[in-house]
Image 1 (cartoon, rainbow over the protein chains, first blue to last red):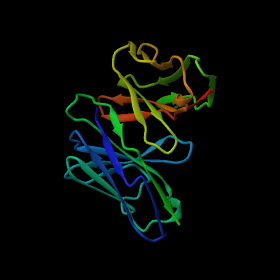
Image 2: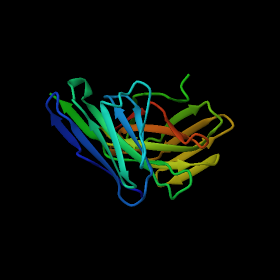
Image 3: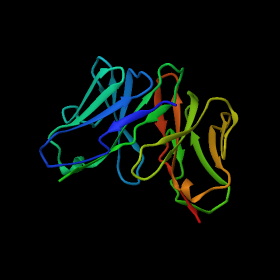
Image 4: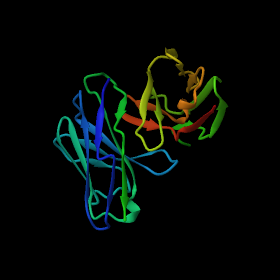
Length: 117
Length: 111
């Protein structure tokens, strides 16, 4: 089945630093990837849609200068949390669909737990 | 009204019970439906993916779709403590290619 790999699985950083999270589709190509944020015991909140070779589309209320997204290849998207602050601490999850399959379901990475101290 | 409604639970059942998890949706453009299982501190794992009305079975899991009433269900037979997780239903709007998720139902299977 389609596998999405996300790294790191957890990261602790100091306030003011930047953190990069990688999302890779291992056995399929994905021109579109999705980044979600999840707070404890809450559902997924779509942050942005990452588009290969073009700008990401951000959901309302998500700061694009704070959450930089780069989708440089058909198998890799990165999310960089810039100048992180404690309120950015959360669980970030990426997902992708196998575009070789019509109306493919989404496949998720295992998430990255970010703690900003 | 949310586009996909799901009871958040928690739902507690004894081991071996049949579990029924349900969602309703409001948009007729939703044509594809998914069920995901999410363990704590992990990403959601795809369990079932259906398009047609009716049942789809995979091992102990059965997904049921009723497009006429806009109702989707996931049944788990012979539930195990390892099934304890949050179950998310999702729909794909084939027109906009947006995936809409329910809030998730927390399930606890007691040994």
